[in-house]
Image 1 (cartoon, rainbow, N blue to C red):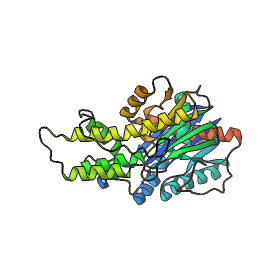
Image 2 (image 1 turned 180 degrees about the vertical axis):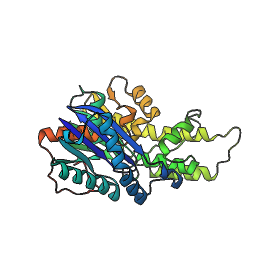
Image 3 (image 1 turned 180 degrees about the horizontal axis):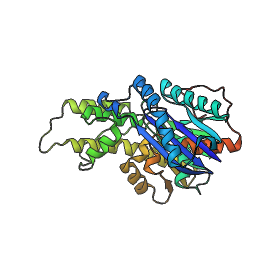
Image 4 (image 1 turned 135 degrees about the vertical axis):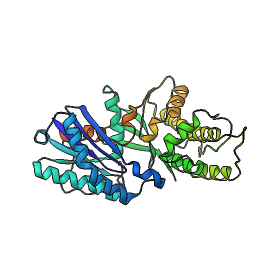
Length: 329
C-alpha cells in the first residue's frame, strides 16, 4: 500500500510517500520569505504553497521511485492551521484524488504529531502520556489507542512555542523564535536571571505563559547590555523558565496517570534543553522523542497516519472541508 501525504497547515510545504508503514520520502520546503516579517503572513503562505506544492510532490515521487498511478490514497492535513494554507493543500489533494480515482483522507495535524513517535519507535505501546507542544498548542494527553484520547491539561492563554517566538522578538533574535533563543542560550547562564514559572495550583496540569512574556518585556525595558550583562544569559534564563514549566507539568501527568511511558510531540520537542531536562528529572521513565526532522511540520506523519486510517476505514469521504480550529477530540 502506498500513501501520498500532503502537509500545508502553516509555512512548510511538504509531501511524503509511505509504503506499507515505511517512510520512503519526506520532502519539506520551508518558506523563508516570512523571516523578514518576523512571523508567518497567512496570505503569503497560501500563495507560496500554490507555487511549491507541485514541486515537492514531484520531488517526493521521484525520490521514492514511484509514479502517481501507484498511489492507493492521498492523506492531507485538514486542520488545525491557517485557513488559506489548509485550503490550498486540501484543494490540491482533492483534485489529484479525483483525477486518479483514489480516496483522499483528512488528517488532524495534532494527531499526526502524536503518531510521528511511532515512526521513531515502531514498538511503542499504548497507553502513554503525550506532551504536545508547539507554536499554537501546549497540551497534555493520555493516549489509550487510536482516537482514544483524554485531555489532561492545556494552556489557558499562550502556547510555549508562542512564548519562544515573542521572547525572541523582544530580544531581537529573529524568527522562528525557538531555534533563535536556543542558539543564543548556548553560551548563557540559565540561572543568571529569574523569570516566573506559572504552575497554577498544586495538582493542575494546565499551563500559562502570558505572564512570562510580560515579565521579559518589562525586564528588557530596563536591560542594558554590559560586560557583566549578556543577552545570552537572558535567553538561557528565559528558555529555562519555559522548559521548567513543561517538565514539571509532564512529571505531574505521569504521576497522576500512573504510566511509565511518555512521548513528546510538536515543534518544541526539538529543543535540546527540554530533552535534557526531561531525561534528568525523569530518568526512570520511558521518555520518547521523535527525530528532529519529525518535530517540525512535515508530511511523513501525515502519510503514515493516513495509511493507518485507510487500513482501519476510519476516515471521511471526499466531502470534508478545512477546519482551522480542528480539535483532537
